Image 1 (cartoon, one colour):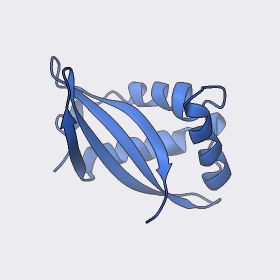
Image 2: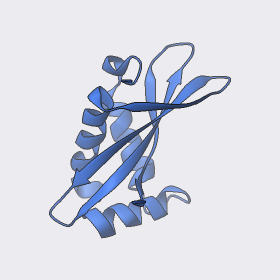
Image 3: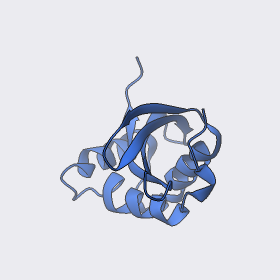
Image 4: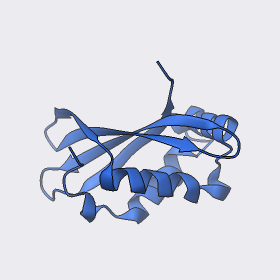
Length: 115
């Protein structure tokens, strides 16, 4: 299954989430994610386009896994595999498709340990 309404995704929303949360070393919850992106893949706020591009591309065609319905949205996960000169990793992205607008929003992205 493709993420519902994937063509409505605002790439700027992905960029905001990546920069203010996923790659923000000062964020309480995002800091550890930022450390792993930097340590394992060499991705920081300075070269964030690598991650933003990968997340956007995955959202447009990779398999979306429905997780649950909440009061405000349907939650989906999309996994993508990211390769950089520093290394490679499986990245999990979380998406909320809002009931009122149908527009998907990135809620999280982090490196997922291989099983």
